[in-house]
Length: 377
Image (tube, rainbow, N blue to C red; front, side):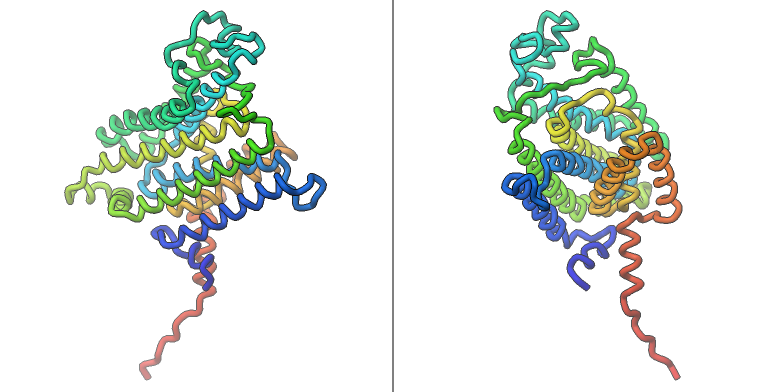
């Protein structure tokens, strides 16, 4: 069996074959970047800047699916609110990008974003101060989702809220943030959100080199997050997390503070989602309250279920495949996409409970020659 076959056949507990995934990811990224920058646009091998941006968006979704898989596949916590952490990270990046516009906005105000001038704001809100510094904005990208996850997790897990009740609470959290960010007086652009970005750390967002760089950084971050996640989940901490998933009462009985493990894993997952949101915003050029929509969080669960939860690699594959299908399907029948997505989730639940990776593992096991049993005669 080849190394790739072994990698996918390793199942839910494997952590030995992270390197092939990282090599493939970085190799494909390098080829796409070089093709965009150095091949003529009329070449058959040229990758357009639009495709680079689309691939970057897919990788952000893959990182987000990874965050959901960490908490759902390995700890058994079905979160329907990870869209909130993704959007908060995106808003932190969006605020930085808005401050970089300066007097190049439609109203020419060097201190206030255009939407604040339009709404009659006289001064910058306190929570916008410091967002003109890249390093400070990056701290907020990690701190805000992580802090929210810590507070929510500490309250929920210490109260031993589990199952469908916890899922409803996470969905209520993201819906509450959706309603809050829709309000103009919140200072985040209301319904329109934040957009019309010009540059990032001095580089124009419209330049091909910037687009390629953002795509490459996203791929590197996905690889880094994948490696760190695999290391954590294959450590003693990860084994305790698996024990909590399989039987939390037994883990608690033998002396583990299960609520602490769940809180810190939830925070780690939320931070990954926030980083994915921060990388998403400069590539798509907008962030608005629609990212808090509960349907988005449900879609993330579908990505993981399709790929195979509890595998990490399955979450990445599911996110890439489902979002590619969404891009193609919505171009043909945009009204029918949600029905197709719902049908896909039902089919996966009924016939592919372990997702694509699980199906691949089963097929490889069937092809493996069975040992011949010796007769007693």
